Image (cartoon, rainbow, N blue to C red; front, side, top):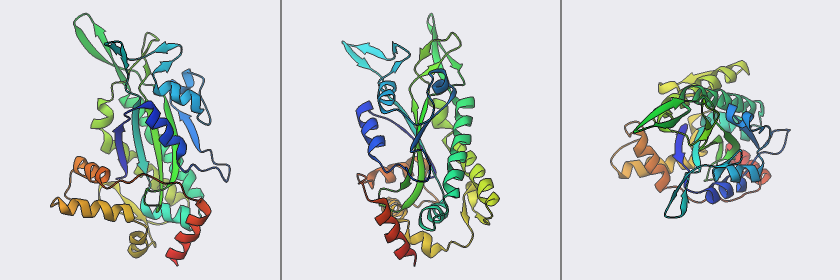
Length: 283
């Protein structure tokens, strides 16, 4: 799945997951970055600060506490994860063949897609007497984390874009985010990311082979090589087959359920050792 949207269940789970994974640190690449006009309004830029990240997940924004108290307990959804994943051939050329320019291209495409989300999908709900109105806000607080492997330890360039459950209204007040449009336009987010990435991949001198729904792969990376590094894809395909469907026929919801059902906890691994294994497999 090239683009996926999922709700975060708790700030503690989110903080530990995103901090524990295999961030890039070599080659001058930042392991994380703040994005969005909401982040800019709070003076957040550059690498994500872990304490600020936790506070925002907990709804602590600019001295305010977002959420609702019920029976003495604070209820606040931490946010949403919009994950954007590169085509497998791009991941292989970046991680196995070592063309780090593709990692920068991926990052630029992610920023373009998330800027679209912010401009067209950011909104909150304003209560006016007995009615609740949707107000477009045009600002988000996003913490983006770039990873290079899948849960099956295959090369898989992807970015987790953690959208905080906070946006600034026209009156200057911070309120919880209304995420409905992000879910409804999930496919559009993925298309924008892929189209932008395809342009940048071509600019680097690669030829691409287009597929349906704006999918593409780099020309010359064989299906055998792609298959050898697609363990997670094979697991999801098998799970869909058990349900009497396939990746082409299944709905987005069915694919997401299959992905969750087959997902194992991601384990830490030495990046250098992984690359050596990948290159042996490629050979």
